Image (cartoon, rainbow over all chains, first blue to last red; front, side):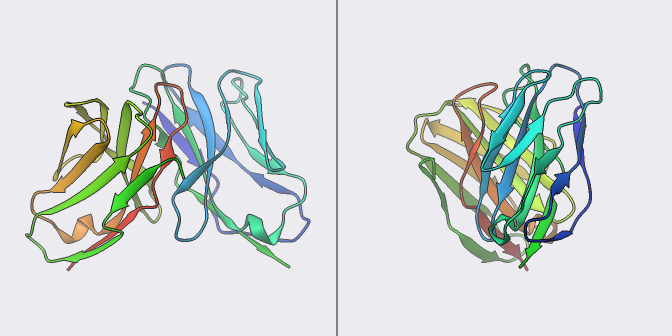
Length: 113
Length: 112
């Protein structure tokens, strides 16, 4: 079946630290991969996506590279800010399954000044 | 926001009562989804729709039904609410397969 596994949180960092949130997946087809972010009290917002192997998605200083050989899509940011504190979700969709997303369990990030 | 409105935003109900949550979109997107969010589980798909009157089950569909009589509205009904259905419910829309989902702000449901 299709599934997504993320590193457990919470992750606590100091401002300007380097961030990595690990995400690995299993998929029966050839998935598209996504990172979503959820700020307190809000819905999920698309952060970035990649649709084929070796694609790099990027947005707001965040990056993730689609690695088919390791079935991974790790999220990175070189210098985090307090405003990046949120819950981050990795997700996949497979073309033959109605466009629905399968999510990891989420990783809470807390950035301290 | 991508033109998605969920109502109500908060609801408290008693065990055994029926509850209907509404999702309304103004984007004319074909696909609509209902997810529930629970600690430690991320988001899990309840039901989804790929067109008017076309719906299918997700991974946690037991105890829920949906209806889509118009492109813009997707209703989620709990026929007889149970405490295990206490959760935050999110509606999402999408233009099509492979496109990203856009989420509403959620409905927090408490079943006492």
